[in-house]
Image (tube, rainbow over all chains, first blue to last red; front, top):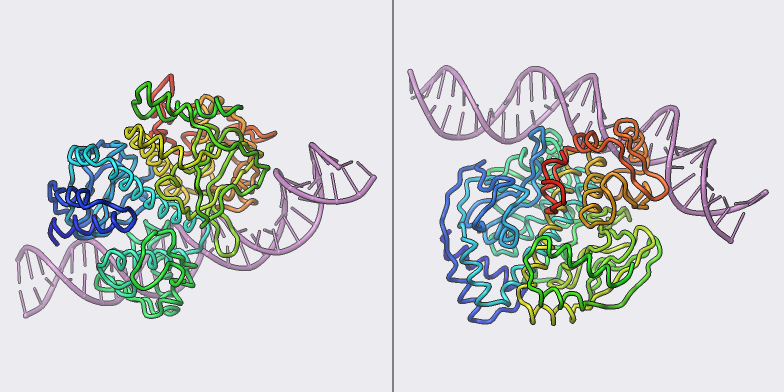
Length: 250
Length: 250
DNA sequence: CGGCGACTTGAGATCTTTCAAGCTGCGTGG
DNA sequence: CCACGCAGCTTGAAAGATCTCAAGTCGCCG
């Protein structure tokens, strides 16, 4: 995937939630930056280090994470192509978290200076960007609720539903079959569980809902069962999918 | 506490992270809205219901929460006087979460229309507001990490450290002794634990760090021990306290 | 005085982790 | 072409953390 199409995906995301003028869209589409190829496991942003750019995912899968004193990690957000992983850093350039490539990835590091120029020329875009980070926070709140109050199976099912719907909304795949090549250890870090337990949970979901994770793809045979196991209601994602409203995913 | 002083607290918060002109500050200080007194347990915003105002805490303690299908709640954020509990709802007026008064509280419901007028007159304020919600997201990410990866004692200690520092930063109390009248059940909802377990954890922290929660106040005898038990590093809160940098809280 | 909400305590059940070992597939170097 | 090593996955069994259920205490308010 090229710069061009990643920026277009990003624009599509923004436009799905904010009404932009043609000039604003044109201005957005001129965005560019340094293209960086990151191997699996590469830390693209370190916690507590100021950044001067925001990271647009072009290809692969990124994670925002927090690190405990004993080295354990908790992933707090996943980012797929078209996501700006840290638009946050534009208003607040000293992140408390880090960003890591979970799989071999390509990102576009868009300088804050370009973004600032854009926002001063088109103030309305500030609101659109802000809105994007608010949706990000909505997802984060849902994660908190799931990790805090749902058991391993529900939690895992929920994350997979979320990823599926987001992949589909971004036009990258179908929600029942999408390419995401994370390891079980990474999944464990996202769900606040251990590798061993994730392994058993996935095995249980395979039996219950025909879940298949292999060769870097997630396949879901019985979507409805998975979604109902997860108590999944997509409204917190604020995506509009072509065929239906959020409710129907339950 | 009056409207006046709550708005002033809010302005102080904003100014601690964004450089505002005198005009902008003057404009902010004209903010007003409907003053509402909420009894303990009152839901001020319901999940999935659009709102036309943002909620400024004047007195008391609010919680943002998410509700599970079986009725269990997870609190995802706490808000003390001077906090705007859902500035988020300005760019995105349909929240996926609710807001509840954990103790008898007073809030000022500031109409989105006033805020929008303000932002179009002073576009720079948009960035300042955005920044405020980004800090909110930083706190949320830290909660996710704690709930996902820290045990009950660490988690509880961390939340109390956070609250203390925030109260102190807001000028409402000292971090070692502050008025917060939540129940153990509410604390449990914030930490993803059960009431019974919170009870035992608090008892353990009382022994370990001289923690005292009673009569609506939290008292901490040995702050350093509590903070080190929590692995607490205040930098994610983006507050600057008079005497010292974030590190010293560890 | 009675009742209610919040707090406390005990004991057993359940979920999740830990530790340990073995398996599998794949890339690399001999 | 094969052997090796490594990373990721799988499985078992015991330990540990947390939850559930149940009962009882405490303090406040009507």
